[in-house]
Each structure stands twice: as C-alpha cells, then as structure tokens.
Length: 214
Ligand SMILES: [Fe+2]
Image 1 (cartoon, rainbow, N blue to C red):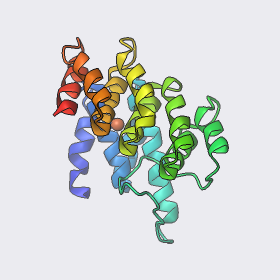
Image 2: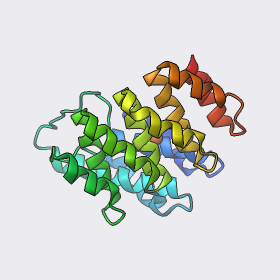
Image 3: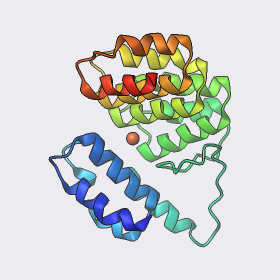
C-alpha cells in the first residue's frame, strides 16, 4: 500500500531504530516497489549497518525488476503468495541452483533468486540445499534462508534450524527467524528446542521462542 511509504521512509531514516526494524522498512519499500522509495533506498545502500545496506540494495534491484516487467504481466509461481525480496530464478535444477546459492562470488540478488526457486520446488533435495546455506553468506542472507525454511514447514529443515538457534554467536536476526521457523514446523522436537531458549539473554530470541511456542 503506497500510503505506507512516508512512514517506512521515516523508519529507515531513523538510525536510533533497531537494525531489524530498519531492515523490515527497507524490505517493505522493495515490496511496494514504488518510485518514491528509490532515493531513500539508494541513500541507505551504503548504510554502516550491513543488514540494512544489503536490504536496500536488494530492494532497489527488485524495484528495477518490477519496472522492467511492468508492460508484461508479472508471472508468479510462488505457492506461498508472499511478496519476496527477489523473483525466483528460472532454473529448476537443484545442483545448479545450489551452486549459485552457495557462491560467495555471485551477486546477492542472484543468490536470492536461487533461494526462492529452490523453495518453490519444495522437494527434499531442494530443502537440504537451502539448509546447507544456513551457515554461509551474510547475516541478512542467512536470516532469509531461515525464513523460507519456515515457509516450507518441513521436518528436513529442523537440524539446520536447531543448530543456528543454538549458536549463541549467530546474529540475533538469524536466531529469531530460526525460532519462528521451528514454531511453524511445530513437531515435538521443535517444541523441545524452543523451550530451551525461553530465557535466552537476547530479548528478540527469547520473545521469538515464546511466540513460536504459542
Ligand atoms: Fe527479514
């Protein structure tokens, strides 16, 4: 909704906000994909907080992609109906997609495109490929991997999510998404691991586990 743009711009510009909140504001500007968001996204593409800078870069690429497609109809094969930060890659070859996903040399936007293509496949090998990416790339990249594993709601992802939630040195943004994902998979094993972090020293982790258990 374009009416949200001024509010989102204010949040993104406010450096006293938590990085995670500014990240969500930038991501929302990318999802709305309106020209009005371009200057502010460009401005913060070099923000000192890496997660915010990378989100702005991705959002700018998404706005450009939407603009390029405006004349054609936006073909959407996303079974989750979410507005993703990048469109899926056109390949359906797991090995090929995994190579791009894990490549530290590939552009972040291309790695995101591989990620969403793997998610849309919804096969066990695709989920394992996604899980293997939970320990590489930037914190922003890893949090998005955890997010799509949550959308998939498949037990194959549990060991990967568990490992990252349990890693106290992992970014809290990533651990938060892992907790949410375990909450959406919701097996007994998920309940057990979430219960262990109800008193985590990071507020966002603790609260995510609480909500996930509910
Ligand atoms: Fe996010």
